[in-house]
Length: 293
Image (cartoon, rainbow, N blue to C red; front, side):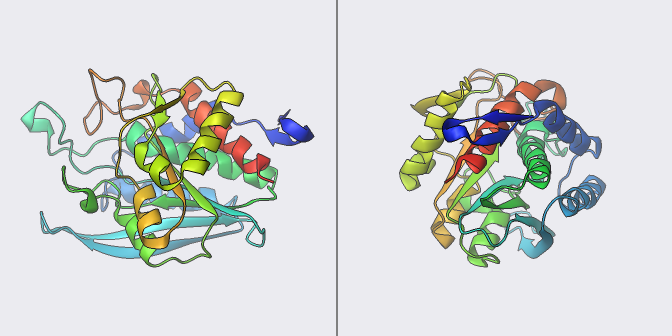
């Protein structure tokens, strides 16, 4: 189905139902913490999906030595590009790894268990998988690079630079021409989705941030709140700091609300997520892609 926006442009409809199936599929592999069976199975699945849709796909491998725990990780960003020769180029990103520890659990016996990461991991990837299939079916005049970043969730609480390893490596070793801007999505599957403007996004890319939240208002997407929310160190920060790519983060950190939070716990499971929430973010991104002049 195509829907119209201003000036008669046709925008494909984003399916929250399809995206939710992608979320469930990732979770069917179990936790996707680096080195695990779920990680390896999901890597093969994501490569298969992107190779069936994108013009070109490759892995950007890198190594990370955890200075706190002494662990060594062989990691990989997955990079897929659509319409490489377009003048306008944008980047869409999400992290595909899940956290090896449930350190926000109140039960000590659960704190060393890897988490399933339905929202924190699978939700952003699910939306981008559906966008990849849309781009395959109806190529955009805009060039799009989709990146699934690895090693985002290996960090220590209170030490920002220990997170976002994949985007740090990517930004320091840029393997593509610098895109016009980047949009990172993370934790966007919450049934009670609420998306205020992330403060670092507004500081580093105020024009892009305003444009997207105004578009969300125009599209009647109620999860998007035009007030300022938290400052969050996510994959958008290294893209700006090391590659000077105008980058923003769409994220709901209160999961599900300010009183309770399933973040980094065993409760981050698909039943806490919603196709309707995925559809709101996917609809915004799809309209952004096909509405760029």
